[in-house]
Image 1: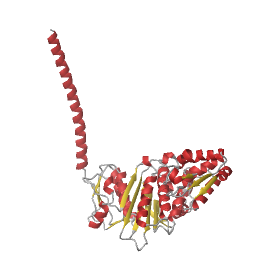
Image 2: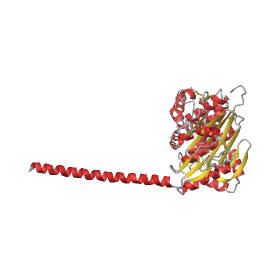
Image 3: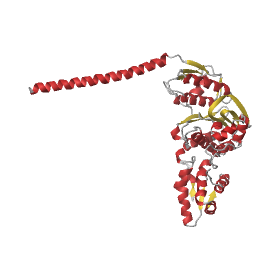
Image 4: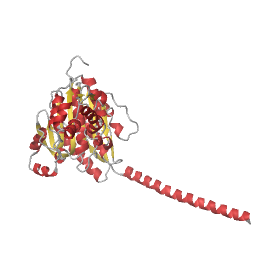
Length: 329
Length: 106
């Protein structure tokens, strides 16, 4: 009798275990099916091709690149995957590589794919830039020693060690001791600005990208720093911003370069960061210094401003340091 | 004496601790304020050396020296603080300006 009871309870246990196993298998297969379906959906979708403009340079061809970025953004917002076609670009500058990398990473995963330029020289430049460290790829190519891409996610905010690394890199190639202070301070101020002002509601919510590249042929070091925040002209206090609505882009840019735009926080001790950037930018150490924000393209050296037809939601800084020493290779 | 590059960091950061490492707030609370209070006790002067640093963000200087001036008074700070910078004399002027015009919250 006891043996029968034991047998019965064992069978009961086994049946219970089998039921649990079957339940688990059903749940897993549902999840697997969902994943398979999603993958099929993605692969089965028609990728909208966005052809990059042949002159792929953000500072020299700003309007076309913003238009190109706008097309990508429109498709992504509509959940339509995009293929970025860089096949036929004839001109590629470091600032555009940084812009593209930031743009691709800003968008939803799985909705963007792309290729490298066909031109072998440009392809080498693109592939060795570090771009592939920030996208999914079958095999990550090595990054060339003459450039580096940094992406700072919000948690790390202002990173003095990255600013130091960049400054040492520049000093090693350009051999101008005077740039040490200017370059370091510009980088810290830019990181702090993005951290504190790029997002209207909360600080530390906006990423920034820093890319530096040394062109040995022209002996020029190119720096790009950008974020996709609200832009300088929209980061001011709302009351004063209403007053700025009546001003033209050139007037706003003028106010910015002269340090008249106060900090959004309202504290009198703050808002000096941008003045510090502009002051350092105006020095003879820099060949070029360009700011693109909202609807303005500002050349800090010449103090010229161009009004853009397509707005850029963010802030973009580009500057160059040239090595004039004839004796150095 | 405080030589910032060796006693604190050669790569100062931004304003607040929340902004990132080596901030003005951290420098003030961990080093500058305690040393200054010690000098006040001993009726001594505190020497600050800015050499061998990569650079100083305006927010770093404002949060450290501006706050020192707000907390202890401009006259006291000017009396007990000696600033040295051989590599970049302009920074002394910048810091003195900050001490003479400490932050005023609106």
